[in-house]
Structures are given as C-alpha cells and as structure tokens.
Length: 177
Image (cartoon, rainbow, N blue to C red; front, side, top):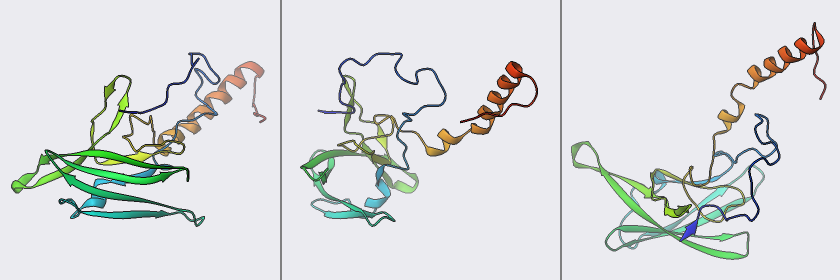
C-alpha cells in the first residue's frame, strides 16, 4: 500500500493563509513535476520488455527512470528509480485497456497510490512525481494544479483590491508592497 501523502500530526484547519486567494504555500503544479506518459511506452508494452527514460533540465541536472514489463493476469509496468540519492524505489503500476475504433486498444496506467483508506486505481494517461514526493501518482492523489490556473484572474484580483482601497481612502489608490 502506497499512501498518496504522509499523514501529518497536528494538522488542523485555519492555518497560515487559510481562506485567502493569495497563498505563500501554493499547490505544486503539473509543470514542475516529473511526468511519465503512456505515450512514452507506445510500441514498448510486451512481456519482459524493459528500458529507461531520462529527463534533462536547462540547468544541466538530469533524472532517469527504468521500467520493466511483466505479464501475469494483467500487465504491470514496474518503474525503478533512486529517490533523493538515498533509496532505490520500485513501484509496480497496473495497466488497463479500453477498446478503440477498428478493433484496437488504448493503454492506461492505474494510479498506484492510496487516498485516505482506498486505493485510487484511477485510469490515467500520465503519472506525476512532484517535488518532494517519493512515488509517481495521478494529479488528484498528489493534489496538483496547472500553472495557468494559478495565474488566471490575477488582474481581476488586483483591480478588486484597487476598488477596495479607493473606497477606504477615496480617489486613486496606489498599493505599496
């Protein structure tokens, strides 16, 4: 059983930034996470196949992940990687298929994480490893958002603050940071 998020002792509602739109502790985004997509495995899903993927950033840092396909009742891809240069991780991920037109089939990952007390097992095309996380999982399990949704409506919020400042002080308001 792989927990989506480690349980934190003493977490309660009403913490820092609670109820405000602007947060210092924004959610992690899909864009800052490592991503394994089902399309990366196109033509590579057959018994005993294996290989590796490598990501390289502009800074020159890189990360790699190995995979191995086993075929029992259902096909399973086992992802292997080193976490924080301390621990080797091997995470088995079940695969699902759905029929396509013309007698084909589309492959999907089943999210391997546990949310609360239930296995997620969501059918997804991508799995994510956000900064600080140990295991790959779906967007919901890692509570990921898109960068664009964090930037949406910023201008409207700024205008709303300007209106409130005008009401308090009258005339043109300039917000000092």
